Length: 224
Ligand code: IPE
Ligand code: MG
Image (cartoon, rainbow, N blue to C red; front, top):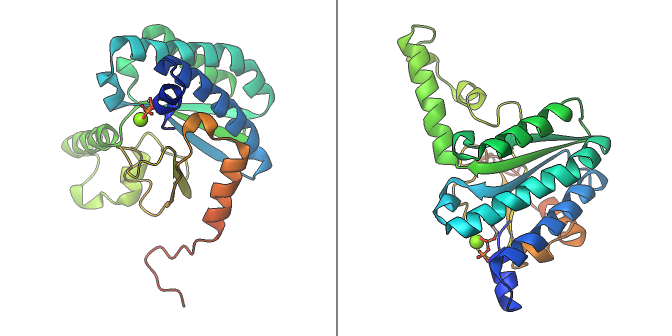
């Protein structure tokens, strides 16, 4: 979800209002997913690098997250949405961690749509943690280094149990992954759109899915 700041700037508004408008886009996209056959949606809400932003912007984003969870949780639960949050929780304010735990616990039984919120998420951090866990298991003699395979790494990622993304969409014209699911996106189809995130909605999601449908996925094999 990129382009909130530019959306606001183009209108002479403070960045914070761009983020607020971005939350409206989140609501619309989450609602559209089940209708479009999407079972898993991951939103990259805040990266490990976003902590470098001015404290006022960071706290504004945290406020929006608080408001979003408090106001939407009941509706998400009733709509069959399961919420999962991935990222480094140790850096998050305690009340946000509590809210996130509550959202996960209250929606645990749902399966219509799994909404994964990547919050204080960085793929390099995630891979470092996985490597440490496997090294510690090896030191304890529980595994042998030669037993480490792709599946074992996957089970130690924050996304364990979540399928790899088929489609990865980045808005606002930037064409990079910015530390998002570097392992999991190995064979994802990438769609880059110039639309700024606050302007992204049901129609734009449907268009990205149509583009996905025109791709030929070979996973390294040949067409024939
Ligand atoms: C939203 O857009 C991404 C978040 C970190 C919430 P930006 O805040 O990166 O907007 P731009 O890139 O400045 O336009
Ligand atoms: Mg940006």
